[in-house]
Image (cartoon, rainbow, N blue to C red; front, side, top):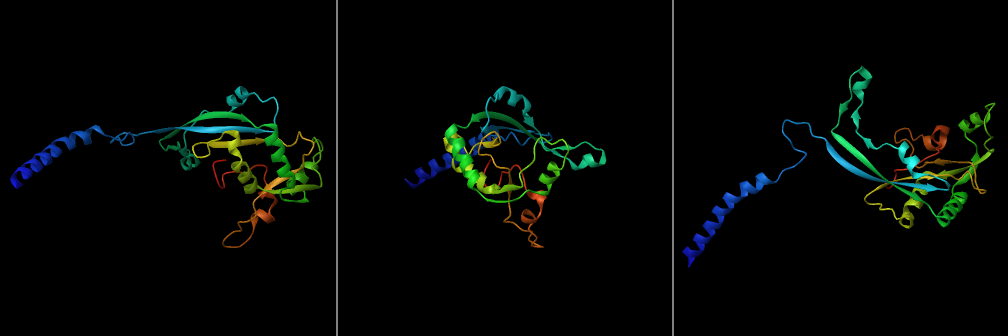
Length: 219
């Protein structure tokens, strides 16, 4: 009986030795092509969300957006050389979303209460000092924490049918056309320089922004 089982086991081992190389030869990695430069391709889903806009034509917006992207090592360009290709190719797949009136009202009510008010920034004052500016920024503007706004949008993105795990999102926000509009800037003041402890976000007008994103998620 023992010899019989030993014969069966030997036969199985021999079969494994014969079959394994063929199976290994059949499987391969597209990214590994010895002697060749391989470009990895990926399709990136991007949600484009409009909040507070009216009359937006997705086709016109799509025409202005990049269809693809191929990153380069740009430092050689400083020396008059061609940038080195990284072997990455991205195709963007856009999905356009218009936020509902309920979503917009809730969001702008949040903005109107968020942060605190303070004097206009130096750059806003420079805009006011122009001779042909369209209007003057009010003497008091609202300072709104950018990451908090990002978090608010992410927490409610399910109502916009956004897949947060497998796509990226860009929000276009138009508060200006509403009656409850307030002049405002976005800030981030909780990360002072680790060496000097100087808080650029709090002290510098150049760190007061009109856009924010990427601190906690894909938006």
